[in-house]
Amino acid sequence: MKIFWTLTLLMIPGVLSSISVTGYSGREIIITCRYDKEYTANAKYFCKGRWGTTCSDLIRTEDKEKWFHSGSFSLFDDTKAAVFTVTIRDLSEWDSGTYQCGVDKSGEIDFYTEVNLNITTADCCEKSISLSAAAGGSVNISCKYPQSHSADVKFVCRRSGSDLCAEETSVKESRRWSAEGQIQLYDDREQQLLTGTISHVTQQHSAEYWCGVQSDQGHKSFITRVRISVTDVPETSSLPQSSSSSTSSSSAESPQQRMCVRN
Image (cartoon, rainbow, N blue to C red):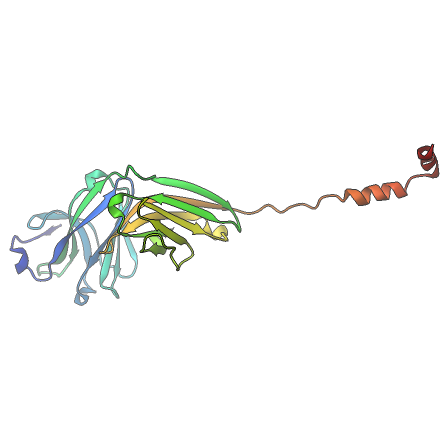
């Protein structure tokens, strides 16, 4: 638990301006928290509460370059980029509120960023879809997104263990296919529709994917879970050669049988 001193905001060293983030009920969100590189060795935390009041820790860790988990929260501290990310799973409207991304400065006033989190419903969009394809074929993904995110970057990423968004492919322009990644993406902003195609699929493509949107500050809101199942193509068995069989049968006929045929 951390107490924030009630001082004028501009007088506190290291304080960043507050940011606003929108997430969707039943989905997940990744919040990006930046800090000065001089604090790479410090503990990082995410707490709920307003500045000047008691802020209750939801997750705190001194781990670097790996995920740390606590309940529905996960934190990854990327010291090379001086950024730590916080993932919140199974969002509900009760999660709306004010949070703090904090850097523990041990005895000094902490470095932190205020996060105003708004959780709402995404009535426009499916929460989860399942797709299947035969190995060697292709899979087409279609995900709707809220109109408020039309100008944002769209992405499809694959869950890999505890990493919610590994192997990401994104598209930044409307009505133009993405040129990179295993998944080709197309964003139709007028229809609020993200389309993706995976060609020449194999068993390795069987996994959980997410369609989502990314703000210009790097925060990611996940919209639709996509489960892809790839099945092997069954081997075709060789059929009996009927023509050779009839030829063989004809050549084996007795002279009497041939006579009967002539009669």
